[in-house]
Image 1 (cartoon, each protein chain N blue to C red):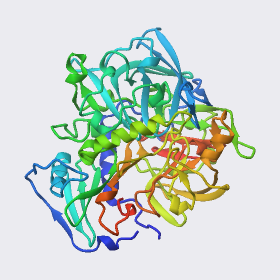
Image 2 (cartoon, helix red, strand yellow):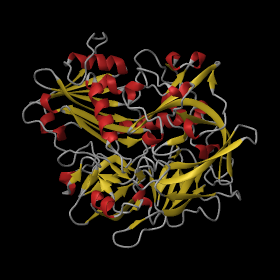
Image 3 (cartoon, helix red, strand yellow):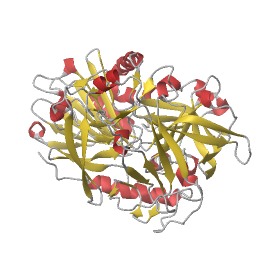
Image 4 (cartoon, rainbow over the protein chains, first blue to last red):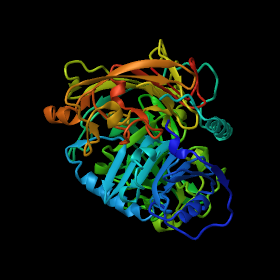
Length: 156
Length: 428
């Protein structure tokens, strides 16, 4: 796959002290450290031209990637693993936006029911989730926070 | 653009570790003997593709339903519940409290009731874990941990907040679930597995919150707790004395143009290679990642590594994205809407290297629903797995119920011996 945006140094960061920050999607990069502590994971940081990727590998093998803009904002996240991360933990204040969008979508489901992947969109937030029990994938991003030239495809 | 890095080493290592731990502690799982014990137990359970039990709300599409009989353990106090979704994409039996009329004993840990916040793709299912004797066809499992979802009173009535409500939107009733219950008969023995045991101790801030203990039987007292493998909601198949190494699903092909039907009748057959009706025959065995349950799928010369699976509980093929397939989609229905039929081909690649190509056709989901409002089986229904613009490592290939039409599909459970080798695997 295309990796040109991920060129540059890969730095293994090991920090023991928890950060007090508590915002994730839409939060400042500091919140990544708090996520890492929450998930008791290890952190790998990859810097690119338009954004950097903070990859947290949790103790149980779940991988969460947080995409950080040059201004230090988390504009996208993705996850993959045998369990799903706590959604409020990774969506932060956008978890409530997500919940409302789900309710609106469910209200539309009045003729046909199709069980499959989740995609909800609302207030500039996009959340996609898929997989099956024992393998959960998902990603979320906020259009307005994405740096110029970055597309949703890169959040994976 | 092809990927050669098929299965990451870390996944292999952790999968091996998880499997070793799983088998060390799982007395309920079948032994790994290469030849399963022959059986004469009646092992065929009828299944139907129909509008489902939530018809007052909507018509289900491509859902396979069956019934299960639950009994108070060791007694003849029993109830048969229909409208149960047959799901190879999950493990464990879950029934709606609203569909249950008998009183089943609550599972406890150190005297405290146990609850579960089970994560599904589209939300979480919360409720108490109880035990029941589970009978399907002639197969009977004793004191099987199952989840009772929702309810107007008791533990299921209130979803623990914030720890469970923060994990997804609760699916607590018939319109949410679309079924009276879910029969999870996927390739794993338990729903969560070793990651919910005390091997991964739960402490403040742990992100794995499936099982809870609830002192006083009150949701407000529920706190996440580890659950031993024997206490977890279990794939009912492994609790059967015989025919317990996996399942076979048989559904007829849809003929006609377009291939649609008001309904279909088929069979859920227990056991693989244990009786004359469940032999592997010429089926190809696609071993799957023992940690995640996936094979790989190659589509348009791109390999989607460790990201393909067969899920009878998904109601369409979900694959790739609109740019990759060059098909429009309806964001409301989540289905592709090509103006004309589109033919595709994909190749599944097993963990064991087995490969097989299959062909399928996609028609407009919205068009089919509009033209055939009374039909419930649609062979050509598909939707995007993602909305990226081109192949990405986020994509996955969810071969849902249409994949089963006209095929015999085997799901072998982890650690279980079959004439085709030890599970987990899919075969068709």
